[in-house]
Each structure stands twice: as structure tokens, then as C-alpha cells.
Image (cartoon, rainbow, N blue to C red; front, side, top):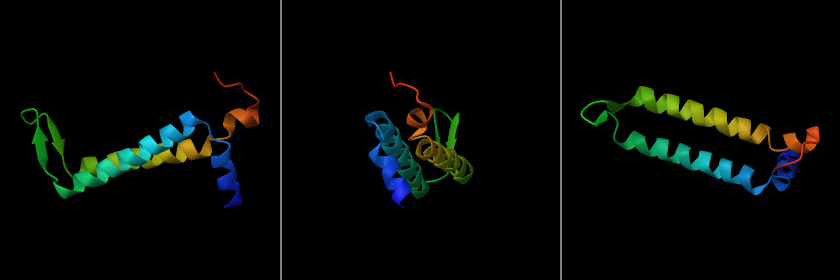
Length: 81
């Protein structure tokens, strides 16, 4: 747990913004569970359990990638910018 808090302490504003945005996107995906089987744009876009599941999987993977790459630039000695 100490390692995780050290990573978050070294995170920049863009890192935290990406993490917060991904968490909000996961919340929006969870909100879609209230009304599944909805169509829009004359049936061209459909929200069902299958699409909600894959949205959640992709967002969880992006959160994992963001968390695992918080200290990448410092470790590799790459300058930001």
C-alpha cells in the first residue's frame, strides 16, 4: 500500500486528470445499467448488457494502465513536455 501512495504522490496533474476521467467514465457506464436495451439515432446505436460489459472492461483496463504507468517517466529518466 505504501508503494501505491508513493506513486500517487509523484503523479502529475495530467496523470490524475486521466485517472479521474476514467473513473467518471466507469461511473457513467454503471449508470447505463439502469436502463438497458435502449436505442438511439433510429436504431444505429444500441445500449445493452453486452455493450455495457465491454465498456466496463475497456475502462478498467485503461485505469490499470494509468495506475501502472504513473512513475514510468521518472523511472526511465524521460522529461515531461
